[in-house]
Length: 487
Image (cartoon, rainbow, N blue to C red; front, side, top):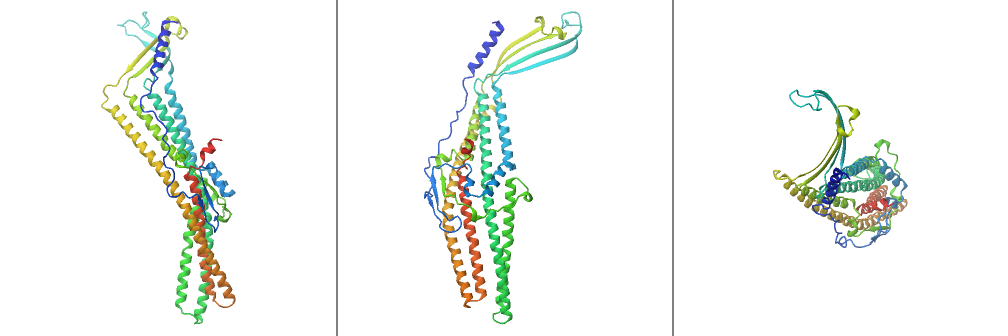
């Protein structure tokens, strides 16, 4: 081995030896939550005996969360909407593009550990000074110069600053990955909720339209009776006010129904005019019986927002190491090989060859306090990331607890609404029989009919709340995305 090659090999081994440590804190995944439950919502049975979705539900502790949980509602239309949204939603597509960019940035950052190799070639026409020795060593002051070189540079990662930068890039990629999954789960949950809301509003609009029809009929009857002097004219004014009130309730319901459809179109990724007819009916839905309930210790490894916060914490930890390494010596190794000649034909001959090997070190001495303050800023950002992680975990626990509370309240509300609707229906049936025997007037029958329709609207709202909050529980537990990712 030639002396120059031994020199280069020695420098390379020195670089590898010096690259054995990485300054700064080593990141460790956060400990699982020590909480054993979600507070007072520990009852595993959720019972409601009446109305659509009035079946009992059971919370199964530590049961797996299904990846395609929305299929448990038994609606092919809903399944189709979700599948289309996952393909065409613009927000999800943007998040996936950002993830691809983050991955490429990680790969690009990883290249900083490798040597750089550059090739250069040039050609020039020159004139030497007549008062100095000619460049070519002969009395020739006008000459051409051809050069070709290969430059190799390597910066040994002595204190791990580059590795910390790569670590931060990978953590940022993880952060984007979990953010993308959070966008996906939010999209699914919002679409399912919007579909349930649209079905509910459609049913409420139909009931309110019938209330308007009955109010108009009642007004016609009262006007006829008033014209015959059977009742006071004041009754006409009272019923006119009731009709106007019933009519006034229709536009907000129709507006909300239209907005729900528009939201579905946006989530699916089409214009409102391109959205096909939606035939989801609350009565056709199946209420999932077995509901998973992940423990808090498992929740922190499932929810994408928590994992995103942990990845952010990881990146902040790595940046502290980057800031520390910036204050320490930086070593460089360089090598150059090439040739220079007045003609291309003998450029690479031994007499025209040139090479150099070098090593250097730079130690920051005075930077106006910038490097020190950047380290302190990185440490403060690490503390910030720790607090944000804890806040995210607490918010997730609150989210699950709130959803469990809502599910229990929904069941009780559904029972009450169903009892009210059943009583109104019984009253209507009695009134109809009494009308057949002439015991009551048509006005009383119309009043009973209107009361039953109003009770039905309340029942529809209670049914919708139970379906919607059941879907919210799947989202609160993370949506089961990790099961899909393992396929």
